[in-house]
Structures are given as C-alpha cells and as structure tokens.
Image: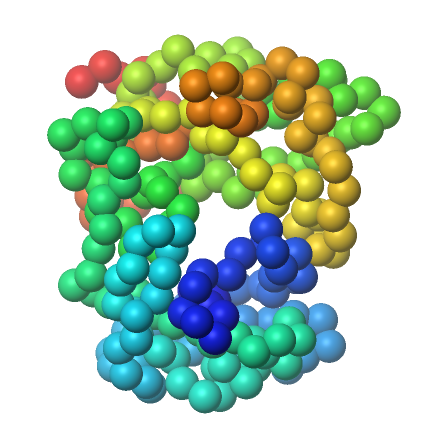
Amino acid sequence: MVVDSHGRFVTQRTLPALARVRTQLGDDSLTLSAPGHAPFTLPVSGRAVGARVPVEVWSHRLMAEDCGEPAADWISATLGEPLRIVRACDDVWREPDGEFRGITPAPVNFPDAYPLLVCNTASLAELNRRMGSDGPVPMDRFRPNVVIDGWESFVEDQHTGIAIDDVRLRLVKACARCSTTTIDQQSGAASANPLPALRRFRFDRALRGVTFGQNAVIVAGIGHALSVGSQVKENHG
C-alpha cells in the first residue's frame, strides 16, 4: 500500500497517476514499473526492510511493515510527492462493517472494505449502451477481483451467493462507486464518465451513491485458487 507522510492510505481518488504504476507478482517478489522510471522490485515475504508503523485506511488504524527508503524514494520520484510503501503484517487484520457481512468473518488489511468484488460483463455492456457516445468504458475502471460472463445484466443484485469450484462466496453489499471509475487505467487521465450514466439508473438512496458490482465475503474455500474459465453457479448456502 502507498501511504503519505502521515501514514494515511493513498489511492487514485486523490492521486490519479497511481493508475500508471504497473505491478508484476513473482513467486517471492513484487515488481513495480511506471513510464519513465526503472522498475523496482520488493520482497513479498520475510522480514520487511523497515519497522512496523501505524497506517490508516479510512477510519481504521492498524500496523504495517515499512518497505524501506529505496522503496519510498522510488514511489516518491514516480508520483512527485513524499510517499512510502508499506506491506501488510501477517498477524494484523480488520473486519468490514458487520451490518452487511453478518456473522461471516471477513478479515481484510488494506482493501477499502471487503475481501472480493464481483462484477458482471453484461452489466458493463448495459452501462455502455446507456452511455452512448460518452462510452464505452472498460471493466478495469471498476477493478473487480472476479468477473462473471454469461449472466443477464445486473442479475448479481439478486443473487445472495455464488460457488466457483471449491469456493463459495456470499454477496453482501452493492459496491458504491467513487471517482476512481472516471480514471483511465492506462493513462491516468480523468473524466466525468461513467458516473453521470450510472447516476441516471443506478442511484441507491440507502447507500447514498451509485452502485456497480457486488462486494463478497468468503464462506468456504480459503486457500483455494480461482481460475479463468471456471464455472460459476448460484449458491444460497
């Protein structure tokens, strides 16, 4: 996670240029790259270079492992302001809002709220149809973990759970979308779209925002891998 000088998380909401930072995950390393800068590689296991430091994700404060001065220098030079990179501690977690996740434990560290985000290609196609000449926008604007093909548009709003091979997920909350959906994930350039189109037909009064996709918690299958092409079934368990 990238943090500012106060330890507060930094996202594309306030720093759209983050979209231009690419990641490549190896067996034991994470390589960061960006246009005009040499790649930088970080370890993803073992002891971090720096000490544990307090960080903040929304209103949650937790401890993280600082990744050291070279990492801080690289991300600061790349994005043009004083920043640091921190790594999640294996023994530090927080829980999403219990109002939506219910009794299912759903530990997360740096994500906004929930472990997984599920989106539907037909829903994106319907959004792009409604956008007309203002579209289309690609799925990467919504940054899902799981993308489902073959469903009708927005049927994910009616499903309470899905099964993918040995993994069962419970869909717990429609995802309220922020300004990051307006940022081109290749260039970092921002526009208004697709939020105006979503506002015309996807405004949720209870959540006080527009929604696209469903947040999910893991009911069963922790430790299993999800594969592209796996069959998805509705599951109410």
